[in-house]
Length: 227
Image 1 (cartoon, one colour):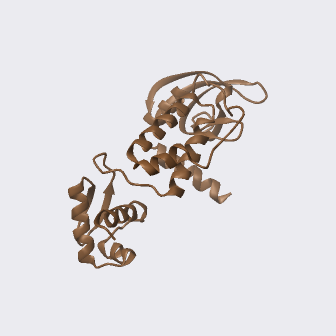
Image 2 (cartoon, helix red, strand yellow):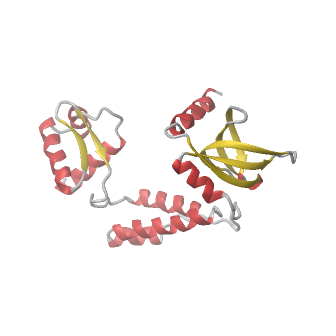
Image 3 (cartoon, helix red, strand yellow):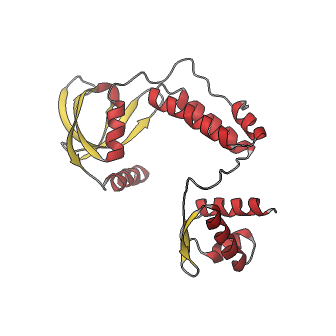
């Protein structure tokens, strides 16, 4: 195996392996000596990879923009094409534009033959109409999720009852026909799902719930697994 291929395989293994990532575990997975792993980690560092840790304590890979782009195989290219094609067909204009940008950036990093496979993939997504129309509050909700900021919404439920809620938005959920916000509802003191098309008004109250978003989202997913 050539040097670059060997380093790329080690890099990918470090990306997917559960911690602790020790040289001993890497050596077993790669079928090489621990000494070889130490040498290749130093080569990766010299190539621009940010790898924390040291011998005897384990390593942690931190992605770095200086790292040379990885070449995807054919099936990975098909997965990228299908995933981005699905996003482009969703009807969320901001994400659709972002998907186009991602596709162009990925294509620019690939060798000529792989670029052609990406741009002329055998896998396509076609939907005669987008699943979601334009939602006036979607960008503000997305920003509040990123920044972990509470928002106040005017909401109308399925029965048409209006209410004012202060929520902590955790995630935007895409289903076949409905776009919803998973949030912690301060009024109900519990998790709630709010349909985006039923949000009549939205404003920020300036309150932060950082760094609770990840923990709250983890708690909700654990509750789903239990039920």
